[in-house]
Amino acid sequence: MELFKNFKQVLGFEGTEGSNEIEDEIMVEMEEEAGEKEEENLSVPSSPTPSLKSNVYKNNENISDYQTIFVSPTSFEECKKIANYINKEKIVTVNLESLSNEMAQRMLDFLSGAMEVKKARFITVSKKVYVSIPDGIKSYVEDENNEIFG
Image (cartoon, rainbow, N blue to C red; front, side, top):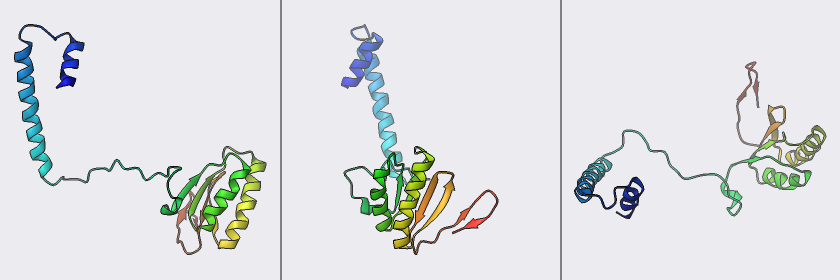
Protein backbone atom coordinates (compact mmCIF):
# COMPACT_ATOMS: atom_id res chain seq x y z
CA MET A 1 0.00 0.00 0.00
CA GLU A 2 2.87 2.35 0.86
CA LEU A 3 4.43 1.67 -2.52
CA PHE A 4 1.17 2.54 -4.24
CA LYS A 5 0.99 5.88 -2.36
CA ASN A 6 4.54 6.72 -3.38
CA PHE A 7 3.68 5.81 -6.96
CA LYS A 8 0.64 8.10 -6.87
CA GLN A 9 2.74 10.97 -5.51
CA VAL A 10 5.28 10.60 -8.29
CA LEU A 11 2.53 10.66 -10.92
CA GLY A 12 0.81 13.62 -9.25
CA PHE A 13 -2.45 11.88 -8.32
CA GLU A 14 -2.16 12.32 -4.56
CA GLY A 15 -4.98 14.45 -3.15
CA THR A 16 -6.97 14.83 -6.39
CA GLU A 17 -10.75 14.35 -6.51
CA GLY A 18 -11.83 10.80 -7.16
CA SER A 19 -8.42 9.43 -6.33
CA ASN A 20 -9.88 7.24 -3.59
CA GLU A 21 -12.35 5.67 -6.05
CA ILE A 22 -9.59 5.00 -8.56
CA GLU A 23 -7.38 3.63 -5.82
CA ASP A 24 -10.17 1.32 -4.64
CA GLU A 25 -10.78 0.05 -8.19
CA ILE A 26 -7.09 -0.58 -8.76
CA MET A 27 -6.72 -2.33 -5.40
CA VAL A 28 -9.70 -4.61 -6.19
CA GLU A 29 -8.17 -5.47 -9.58
CA MET A 30 -4.79 -6.16 -7.99
CA GLU A 31 -6.38 -8.42 -5.36
CA GLU A 32 -8.31 -10.33 -8.05
CA GLU A 33 -5.12 -10.80 -10.09
CA ALA A 34 -3.24 -11.97 -6.99
CA GLY A 35 -6.01 -14.49 -6.28
CA GLU A 36 -5.82 -15.80 -9.87
CA LYS A 37 -2.04 -16.11 -9.61
CA GLU A 38 -2.35 -18.05 -6.35
CA GLU A 39 -4.74 -20.47 -8.09
CA GLU A 40 -2.30 -20.82 -10.99
CA ASN A 41 0.57 -21.52 -8.59
CA LEU A 42 -1.31 -24.50 -7.16
CA SER A 43 -1.14 -26.31 -10.48
CA VAL A 44 1.92 -28.20 -11.67
CA PRO A 45 4.08 -26.05 -13.98
CA SER A 46 4.30 -27.25 -17.59
CA SER A 47 8.06 -26.71 -17.64
CA PRO A 48 10.63 -26.63 -14.86
CA THR A 49 11.30 -23.22 -13.45
CA PRO A 50 14.93 -22.11 -13.44
CA SER A 51 16.60 -21.90 -10.08
CA LEU A 52 18.11 -18.62 -8.98
CA LYS A 53 20.62 -20.40 -6.75
CA SER A 54 24.20 -19.90 -7.77
CA ASN A 55 26.63 -22.80 -7.76
CA VAL A 56 29.56 -20.45 -8.10
CA TYR A 57 32.30 -20.65 -5.48
CA LYS A 58 32.59 -17.78 -3.06
CA ASN A 59 35.86 -17.20 -1.21
CA ASN A 60 34.36 -18.16 2.14
CA GLU A 61 32.92 -21.48 0.93
CA ASN A 62 34.49 -24.93 1.13
CA ILE A 63 36.26 -25.74 -2.16
CA SER A 64 35.92 -29.49 -1.54
CA ASP A 65 32.22 -29.26 -2.44
CA TYR A 66 33.08 -28.52 -6.08
CA GLN A 67 34.22 -30.88 -8.83
CA THR A 68 35.26 -28.27 -11.41
CA ILE A 69 37.37 -25.19 -10.75
CA PHE A 70 38.06 -22.32 -13.17
CA VAL A 71 41.24 -20.33 -12.56
CA SER A 72 42.66 -17.26 -14.31
CA PRO A 73 46.01 -16.74 -12.58
CA THR A 74 47.67 -13.35 -12.74
CA SER A 75 51.01 -14.33 -11.21
CA PHE A 76 53.24 -17.35 -10.77
CA GLU A 77 52.50 -17.37 -7.03
CA GLU A 78 49.06 -18.83 -7.77
CA CYS A 79 50.66 -22.08 -9.01
CA LYS A 80 50.63 -23.58 -5.53
CA LYS A 81 46.88 -23.03 -5.19
CA ILE A 82 46.25 -24.61 -8.62
CA ALA A 83 48.56 -27.53 -7.79
CA ASN A 84 46.55 -28.10 -4.60
CA TYR A 85 43.36 -28.32 -6.69
CA ILE A 86 45.07 -30.89 -8.93
CA ASN A 87 46.24 -32.77 -5.84
CA LYS A 88 42.63 -32.88 -4.59
CA GLU A 89 41.70 -34.45 -7.95
CA LYS A 90 39.53 -31.57 -9.15
CA ILE A 91 38.90 -30.81 -12.81
CA VAL A 92 40.78 -27.52 -13.20
CA THR A 93 40.40 -25.15 -16.15
CA VAL A 94 43.38 -22.79 -16.31
CA ASN A 95 43.11 -19.61 -18.38
CA LEU A 96 46.61 -18.23 -18.95
CA GLU A 97 45.61 -15.45 -21.37
CA SER A 98 46.50 -12.68 -18.91
CA LEU A 99 50.09 -13.96 -18.59
CA SER A 100 53.07 -13.48 -20.89
CA ASN A 101 54.09 -16.47 -22.99
CA GLU A 102 57.18 -17.02 -20.83
CA MET A 103 55.20 -16.90 -17.57
CA ALA A 104 52.49 -19.16 -19.00
CA GLN A 105 55.13 -21.73 -20.01
CA ARG A 106 56.68 -21.62 -16.52
CA MET A 107 53.27 -22.19 -14.98
CA LEU A 108 52.50 -25.11 -17.31
CA ASP A 109 55.85 -26.70 -16.48
CA PHE A 110 55.17 -26.40 -12.75
CA LEU A 111 51.63 -27.74 -13.04
CA SER A 112 52.80 -30.61 -15.25
CA GLY A 113 54.87 -31.84 -12.31
CA ALA A 114 51.84 -31.77 -10.02
CA MET A 115 49.80 -33.59 -12.65
CA GLU A 116 52.49 -36.25 -13.08
CA VAL A 117 52.24 -37.10 -9.37
CA LYS A 118 48.44 -37.50 -9.58
CA LYS A 119 48.50 -39.11 -13.06
CA ALA A 120 46.30 -36.29 -14.38
CA ARG A 121 46.42 -35.02 -17.95
CA PHE A 122 46.07 -31.67 -19.72
CA ILE A 123 43.61 -31.05 -22.52
CA THR A 124 44.26 -27.95 -24.60
CA VAL A 125 41.07 -25.95 -25.10
CA SER A 126 42.70 -23.00 -26.87
CA LYS A 127 46.14 -21.45 -27.21
CA LYS A 128 46.30 -20.43 -23.52
CA VAL A 129 43.40 -22.32 -21.93
CA TYR A 130 43.97 -25.81 -20.52
CA VAL A 131 41.96 -28.31 -18.52
CA SER A 132 43.55 -30.68 -16.03
CA ILE A 133 41.63 -33.96 -15.91
CA PRO A 134 42.28 -36.26 -12.93
CA ASP A 135 43.09 -39.93 -13.44
CA GLY A 136 39.93 -42.02 -13.61
CA ILE A 137 37.76 -39.29 -15.16
CA LYS A 138 36.61 -40.11 -18.68
CA SER A 139 36.59 -37.16 -21.06
CA TYR A 140 35.70 -36.63 -24.68
CA VAL A 141 36.92 -33.64 -26.66
CA GLU A 142 36.24 -33.16 -30.33
CA ASP A 143 38.08 -30.35 -32.11
CA GLU A 144 37.06 -28.56 -35.31
CA ASN A 145 38.93 -31.17 -37.41
CA ASN A 146 36.89 -33.92 -35.72
CA GLU A 147 40.02 -35.29 -34.08
CA ILE A 148 39.28 -36.97 -30.78
CA PHE A 149 41.49 -36.45 -27.72
CA GLY A 150 41.51 -37.84 -24.19
